Length: 85
Length: 307
Image (cartoon, rainbow over all chains, first blue to last red; front, side, top):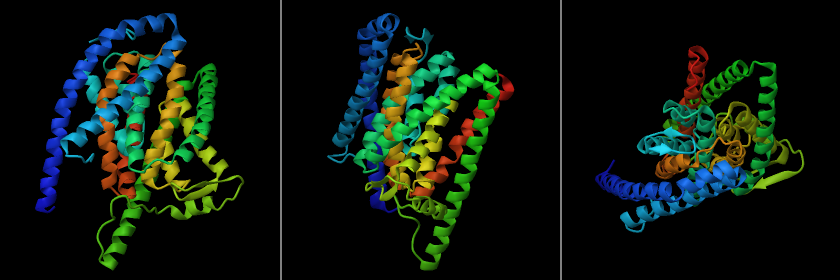
């Protein structure tokens, strides 16, 4: 591995570590928001309207995945100066 | 942290770490990772039915992230994925019916355990042989030409002659897959998807351990595209599985959402990593995964514990 690629790997790892720290902070806040605002509603839905709960569960997991993918891609781009990988 | 739907106390950090690890595996190999996620959820006391259903919901989220990333890298054949979803759902239903028949006969645990061990060991042995042979052949050819190792994203297979013979079966309608560079009979695609679905319904999980290798060896799809397309197909089949489990009260979506936060990072890391490895190397690295599945089944058979 040449000195230029070593520097690139080091820069990538540093950006990834920084990304993880920012992401962890965002996710921690998100946990409490989701459990606080959605927890009770989802439990009621699961006990009273199980079919609606099944649809909401799929929409929630897909919606969260799309948002998280956008957040991580955006963070990567931001920390690596316009490049996503 | 208390999760009220499954009435379980689980550390969210544990769930995020498990999600991250399965995300890396899923992004890199195109598998759902249920053979690790299920036991990992059982390990912290989550009931078996919730472990299976919640794992499927988490697989949907992780596959969305990994498939989006693979799509950006040009590794998803949407047409193939949509056709395969039809065969997979039909196969999954048939697998579930087989389980019901075995339940009635009273020997479901023994039969499923033996079949899964045979399938896992066969896949590992075959992929070890094929990828090893392909890499050795490329090495000796490169030594003769004095060229370097296989470049990243390159693909070839020691099993190519069989794949080519299968592609010569011109049973109409023929389907052209420009993204994969393959023209093949619709029936062969549906058969491969049906077998994958059958394994999913019969043995549980997304059955990526059989679908990804089948796409490479039977359909002749390049490994990187097989990984990305399998993930896309898993979104559809796992969503179906999540719905059916959720209406039976087997899904704690709060646990799945927490796991997915770790998987979002892991899946992207795994997907990006595929760009730096040639197809045969990805297939060689895949070999231990079915072995882990086999080890877990053997353990549960002989210890009586349901991990």
